[in-house]
Length: 306
Image 1 (cartoon, rainbow, N blue to C red):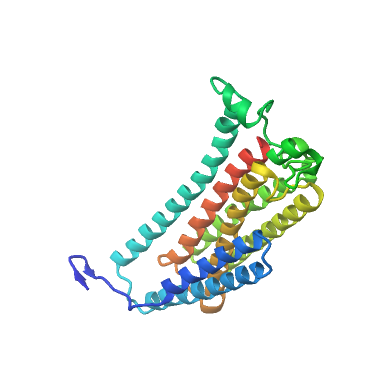
Image 2: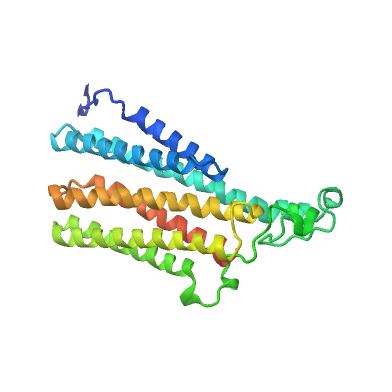
């Protein structure tokens, strides 16, 4: 397609967007079934994740081949920049909704339920005697049925005030890992700009190792929450908001790790990226910095002041 700025390459039709939509549907459908105790849930979730990974691998490959063939004009490359920018902005709004839900519960719903201000009737009819406190360790089921309640609040919460020591507190080490990975990915960016491929590979590889370590520690944190703290998805509003925020962030860390791993394999196996042609890596690094910033917000709102 010819424009006033040169030729704008229009890719051929592709089934990859449809497959990506199907994979995401299968993943979410599997996760919903998994959380509701359906035996097929974990398999559907895993199948959706694998299909999505294959789709991304092929989609990345198509764009890479187009770029290597010289089909990408300056105008098309700008559209990639804008596309990635709007994608990250949509993710910002995504997490803004979740942080907003946490703010609503902690600062508005709980005071209303306790009868604060002109809401005495709310307290009397919905939960007589309720006193606002966060984290909310007592569920409505416990308030009505006592020890016979099926949905029980957690025995402990994840805030720093409950931690035995900073050095054994997993959220602290997860923060160290992610902040360090933000530094290493920046060094990788600087290395490729200076055409130092060996340094680029080492710094990027280190970033991926740190990301995998974060995911392992988050799994360990979830196992500890379920087995030792009584903190589950059935632990009322506190459990729901905790796993919603940290779980979706973990999903984004996994996606960012996958993206960085693709960039590392491209560099090591194919010798891709040049000082003036490395947007694929830049886009992945932008996404990674975004993930790090979200975690800092999570660390303070969910763990430090949680």
